Length: 199
Length: 199
Image 1: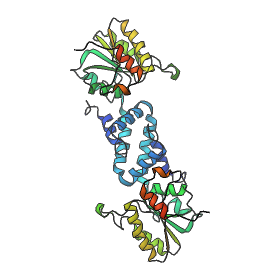
Image 2 (image 1 turned 60 degrees about the vertical axis):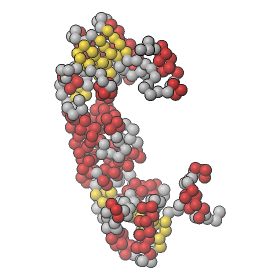
Image 3 (image 1 turned 90 degrees about the horizontal axis):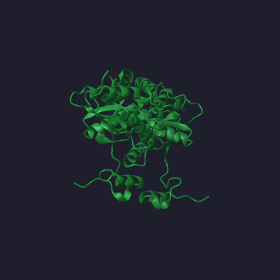
Image 4 (image 1 turned 180 degrees about the vertical axis):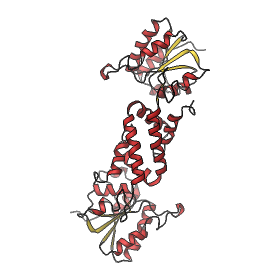
């Protein structure tokens, strides 16, 4: 039956471009929209098209934005001496919500030679230009605490040190609210090694 | 920052029209599409618009379709003496996959007087016309085994009996692969009452 009921099946297939949406969820979503929220679905179609056509990357920090320079870069009140390097746009929001007040640089990924992602793909020449501008006094490496994130952080730290700029890495440790009993041992080892004087 | 980064936030909000997609998933989906699958997103936008504009209801069984009469109704090889009444289009696919070979009637919901859903909203006059055509010899009530589904099945069974047509209800019982230990007691009671001679 499936191939003849074209438009519904096409929609179900198209919905699967979204991460985490399998065949069953896609079908449930398609029926929900068709039965209960056609207006919402039409609105979504419009927003999708507008976003895909108009959103590009900030020429300074590579953040996703529809402008030439993104809002984070153009905000006067952000500290230009601090530069936080993150992997994804979602990380920018996460750091911003955590109270970070400096500038950002978004790699849009991490080094992954097997997938053909090298320094060029991560815009590291753009980062070099930024560092050479002389404004930045500290680069905070906030890539993920994964093998790939660590490798990327190492690579960038070399670049930064060559320019005599301070490099820091966000702290490893026990997450806030974490109970030691349930924390994996590598995290605990790092938490122990990174211990600080109690104040 | 959110309100100025308009197109991304608009997209995130628009994505939430889908059931099961909250703010976090919507943001993850938006970034994924923007970073990795703009073509997929544009395709989805097109499919959404086409589906919402062109898909209506089958004039015979109320199934979602872009045609006047849906594929299930127009298939010659389906047994016209059997009519299976279900709540949603998803149920049609489920019954079809389970090997059911007759016709369908889709209520697009269940009786729910408090939400203003009565016999008219479920298209029961259309069902009556179908029953009066004289072709149907058995109506299988396959509404959900919930309070609302049961009420709806009861209501329809009266309609069908008044026309001297056989009515049946799909069986209650232990699901295939079910372990008795984990089955709730009402299901077990029904399974016990519905026991059959072992062959």
